[in-house]
Length: 504
Image (cartoon, rainbow, N blue to C red; front, top):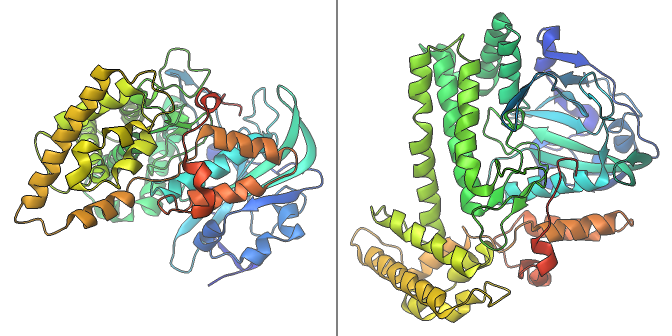
């Protein structure tokens, strides 16, 4: 059931919480706003008519030039740990929560503007977003949704003639973010560290009522809420690791209580497999490197547990926290078996995975292309396809005889594991079915940094066609998309060395 913007039903429950939770603000207008791109899949989530999005009135409303009677714009207050250090001065510094759309099925979706101007939490910033960063978040949220990974969404990008000053003068833009919730770990930290324990309980009750309603009758609802957050986070991190996604800035104010991929800044997908990959050029210590994400998630969950200490006994909180690592390992192992076309559990799979990663690292193979290539090789041909899999690399610099032999040995081990499973009497799937499932698990297309960069460069010249092409493949990344084969190929060497800043 598609509705116009004026027909959407709003609840705006967060604005009914005490004034200490937020500050009411009015978005600052952008000059001469216009639509750059919108995501029809997000329109479907909101039950919003796509024709309404393409109007000038829509652009005027979502860039602060026209008010809307159903909006109650506010900037949320939260704090958080940034690079391990507590920062009490955080909050929505360049964004506002406009309201909460309620669909016909009862689903609730926050509408949030990113780049809407100054708020009380802007600190030294101007409250603006630029076209460059808006494109990156817009594409990334679509890419993650296409991969089946929980994420915030982006309804549209709106640009303008408003100048914004970064390293150079850039176009001011606004991203319309859509999410089930914008509540972060840092919301609880803010109320804990300011000793607003009554408000802390109120926020926990709010989260339970709106996001975990089954816990309202639980004998220990706050402990159960913490357990749910841990489970959702474990699944999220397992999904990130198995698809090769690095967030880049896993501060606690960027961690969602619903296990959503949240606040896309200096993110990156792996090209050549490098477990130490750092996508954020400000991360000098490698705190948020790709292989550190599981341990950082645990650290952040411990910080959340500490913030919840007025509501949960410490022994209970610690016991709940101890469940994170086994849940993460279980979810990750399940994901990796799926990527390899395996269904059953085998206690030797950990060694199979480890040996594979050693091969990928030694040979500097492209993570995505390797698994996609493997997904088209029948079980009888696995051990003889070393050459085809080595093509998942743009250089033979690391293809020594020793490294090639290492891969050949792994392929033989993998082939034996597949044969063993196919021979199991309780496994009915054929090898063709195995490959079909692998092709539906291992994407052909990911948002490589260089593709995003090309889209940005062209958009800054007024050409948005690459954004639309990327949206087509990223929303269905497992399909072949014959017209876009170049986007699935190995990146150019310059495209592998891009690092992104938080201000991007």
